[in-house]
Image: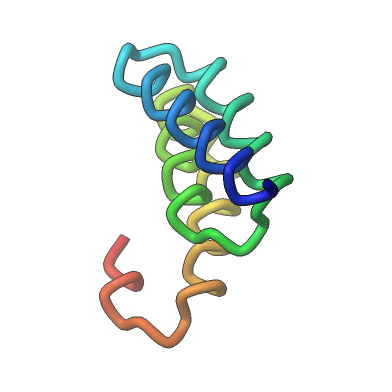
Length: 79
């Protein structure tokens, strides 16, 4: 059930992000992270929404967390 909650929130967050509603996207990504705190993709998506809202510190923190979670994958370091 945890994964399903996270997936649902992630999908809603993506919809909001695609519509340019970054405030609501961030809320959904927060919820997804609460349910599944080890999903690097969610941190990147939330970071992108924070970046769109000029929250540079918050975005950098999320991108750093994504890199930490995916530290074994060199491709993630080119964010």
